[in-house]
Image (cartoon, rainbow, N blue to C red; front, side):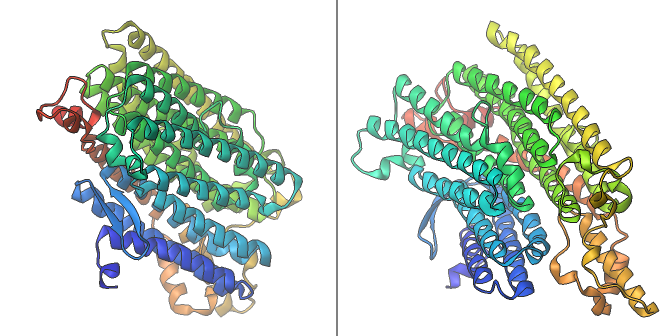
Length: 585
């Protein structure tokens, strides 16, 4: 037990996994006690997320790759800076979603509250384990568990639309799992091993496979991970699922579940199978620009705000994959500067996307909570009734459209630089792809600008186009009791200040503050704290920190396979990305 509470990444991750499970189960058992259940579920998830953030930070600072078994849970974990970056991204998202769920769970009926809290915690526990898994069997099992949790979360609305969306997601998840099983079965058979030890990532890195085996495994894994990541044309489950699931669950789908699929593409394309051939990178680049452009185009035609955001998630998945595909091309062409810059851009945008997309989904969920409407054509005038939510949404929308000086602009600018590097390659196919991809990315940016004009103009500006939009209020003030005396009015004003403070973050206020006008100390502190520009400061700091974190992960990935396959100890001419990046640095 002493090792469990030591400030070591393995102990912190064990603590996070245990807290995810325990808080979900306890919240489910105490479902009849609304406030207690909501607080245990929400704050337990927040503490688990903080443990994950602390573990990821330590791993990024340590910089050494290792494989260990976690205490108590007997789970084989692989610690590297790439895993740490993904762990940090999904833990930050889950922190905000857990705080938001404190209020959301308190305002749902009994059965939905019991199921949603438990399923969200199981989803995050599975995704956390998938990110740090050290072998293919654990990775597939954890991703399958996450997909099943997503299926049941989509069913919570219990209507025909949700059932169709859940069935679509269920079938997509099963096809994805089957593709992954086939991919690693091919590698297992080709290795000639009789046990499952050959499916550990370390063993795969040290095994020499023929070009045909690697290509078949890559294509099967690309289909499997692509179904989880939502790569077009494997995206059918994404828009329906994000629209039907609870708002914070949709944020987890977009910023955590789909990112684990992207992690799988990175591992299979740049890590486990050694240096990729050129055509792998070209395939990923073509799928990436198709996903980015069509995602933005489909988003422009949507009227359901959450379906629109889901299609924009596809657009950003394509942008991230442009960086990954560029890195694969750079490794194949022995261009370390191209590989490092492209991977840096992709990882940086992955981190940034989690920040602004979580803000957008939780903001859209707050609007839906206050109005009961997801159709933007029936809203309007929300800016005057929910000002702080409007400000948070505007900043996140601007970041989504890559407007300077926000974090979305920083990562997309790096991606443009990598595409310019691609166009200077000596090979004809890359000289052709570089300018075409840059133009496609510019068109995607134009579509994003049109979408933010549509979302903000139709939803938040103008006059209300329905009675529900007219009755909307800022962040749950309808759930506070009216006060008539001067003292109660002052406390109620402070209660609103607490909610305004939380709305500067991309989360709703915790339900414990619903009746905070009864606590004068909290109210007085919050009254002054609410005036701080926390959201703007946080966004800027995350942009700066994200650049450092993503760059650190991109430039120091410890992949080691080339030295294992070259007994002389000298890097081979077809060396993998880690060796090229260390040479470049």
